Image (cartoon, rainbow, N blue to C red; front, side, top):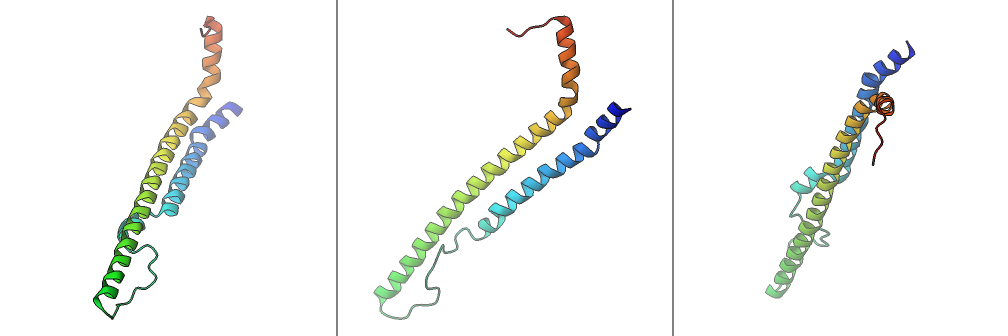
Length: 125
């Protein structure tokens, strides 16, 4: 009776709980990296000091244009690196979660498999 209770929890609520934990971890990582927000603002200025229009001679306007251009390039590079890092981490967490769920399914069978292997006398080389 005790074994049936453990196995019913393991493949019922335990399985669903582990799945929920993996889903929560993926959601938290996706929220942390905010990949969608970074994609929407990919070419926005990074840390632009002056956002207003510049009046003055042509060299001042050109300097402001270059400042904005450099700020946008830096912003695109930084955001691209964060998007790449976030994507790699999300993929790694997904793979780790899938492996963890597969192991969760197999773990209750390991003692029986060990007993069978011991009874037939198999020894790893």
